[in-house]
Length: 415
Image (cartoon, rainbow, N blue to C red; front, side, top):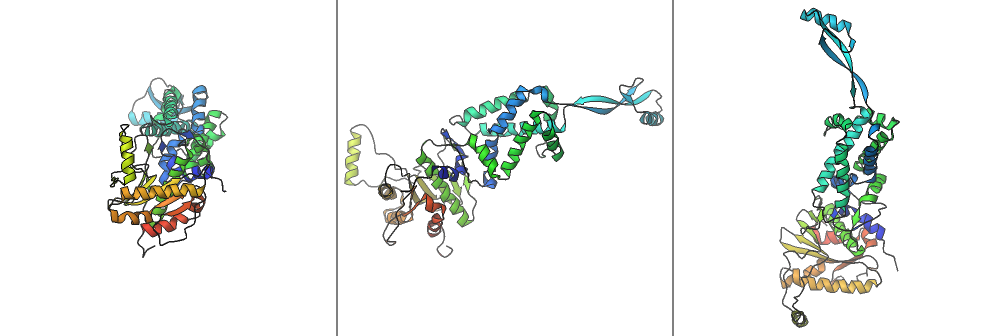
């Protein structure tokens, strides 16, 4: 029997896990699959919690004296006494023009911390502050990120109180990045502080370019996922469905931030909304069968009612106001694929009674639905009988989901 590829599942679901702001556990990544253009905003928020930023802030707070200044000469005009090196030529010209015989022009030395290396430090601090504030606003109190981002924000607040950084922080441009010369000077500095600032800056730059090593380094310390592997697999399948629908329809995929209070769809692609573990308003309890009546009565004896049927993944056509497909996801561990498949098909048949718009549409909904197993999906032998489609994680990665989407989510003439 094949083994479940848990690492592959985490990597595959990385784009949704970036947005998983609930309680979970830190997970390792090998080759996280993200789309930089779509996921860049969330990647930047993860950068602010990464080890490169935290190491830079910790070092800066412990070594404030390493911020270096330069002596810069500024022009001064005084009367009678020169406060600096006299500029004879400029003095003669100004006295001639003004007719003021005692006016003097000099160049006075002034110490400035607004140097190229300090500009790198200030830019990283300023950008990290903006991203930390944004992440803190995303209802993270119930997630693992709450403690992480609170610690980062306390460090940033302490850094911003350092007197030597006030001038360069005031000069940070939100629309302009530090010059190549400033980056070069900081990297060549003998002070470790500036090299650590460059490392944090360069990590963000590489992250924005989709560099695989940067993605792995940042997410290794910041990516959290549900504790249960089967929930991670459900997210991977939901994401896979959304991505393929987006690719086949040409409509951008919008991924939601998953907070503890999130009851909406986890992603949207045009008219299609994809829900994870949500009954939605489309749930309608059908007329109970005799065995269900007996179950209802038995539960009533204990003051309980029948539970609401919540499929693993629901795909809803919001334009039509109806469920397009049900996806039942099964993580095969300590059991056989056929056994979990039977369970999933039974659930889809039961769910179809609750989510089909009318009884005549139950069979159609079953045909359009899907069972996704981690391993050992059975091969269908009869395409005419009323049954859902089936795939496993290995076949999903080789494109088997595309045929299902083309069959049920595109006009047949275009498929």
